[in-house]
Image (cartoon, rainbow, N blue to C red; front, side, top):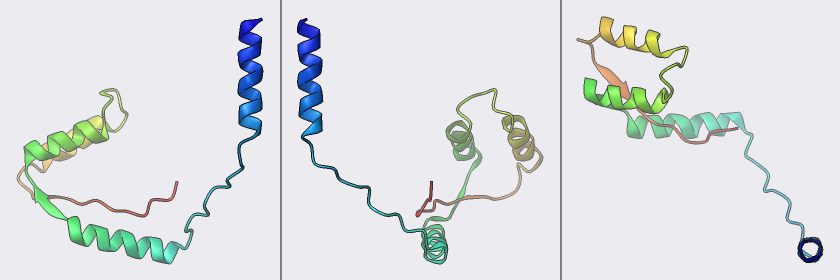
Length: 93
């Protein structure tokens, strides 16, 4: 009985809350791509192999990921090359 009273009180409390619709997203692809390009230009930098290894662990936290072996093979085959990392903004989910 006490649990039913609590549930009823919760339902009443939530029914009195004001509805707030979600803010509309910016779906203008041109401005999104421009923002991403600026973010990449501002953040791009060369990374060393230990930093690349850290990035691997971030991108592939699951060692059974289907692309992890190909990533590792690529790094091994190109270990003498320069690797670069950058971040972007303006993601659209």
